[in-house]
Image 1 (spheres, rainbow, N blue to C red):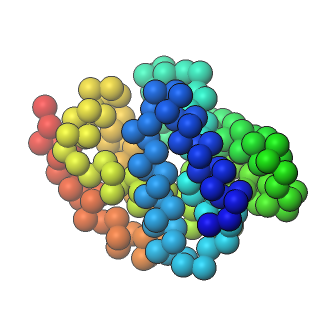
Image 2 (spheres, one colour; image 1 turned 120 degrees about the horizontal axis):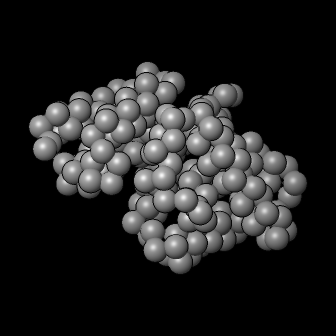
Image 3 (spheres, rainbow, N blue to C red; image 1 turned 180 degrees about the vertical axis):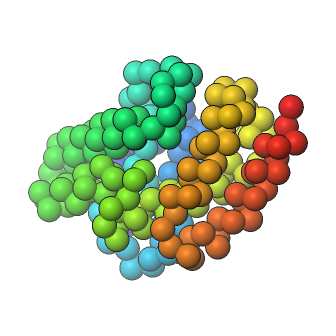
Length: 191
């Protein structure tokens, strides 16, 4: 890994630890892992974006319960745009302070600014790796129960469906299917 990647990784870990959300770093690590499985020759910008795409959560001003109350909740276009744009700004500022080349900064910002909704091939790849990482981590009945406690069964179902339906590649869908199906079964059987 390059020096910029290593610095971003440290910054991400530090930011989430400081925010009291260190548990969220595992998702970022697994997103990077899945990105590398889908594209072993991924460039530096893709790797940086994968390990840092949710950085906005470490700086979030609103609680998730407040976001869920809004129309569309955690899957609303308004929420995603704000999450993506704020994350891209945070990373762009950080990389600039680290002396990164403008080309790298712009590509990382472009990737993070569409990691939820996709767009071009690289943005779709990051989005797919993000979804696989989500399912791998949350396909655990204890975590489903925890999510239900925080945001309710209806919102969890909406989030599961959204994260699966947004996947672009057949390969990513195949990897994710078993976890998606398990989460749906766990959700239906939860109290």
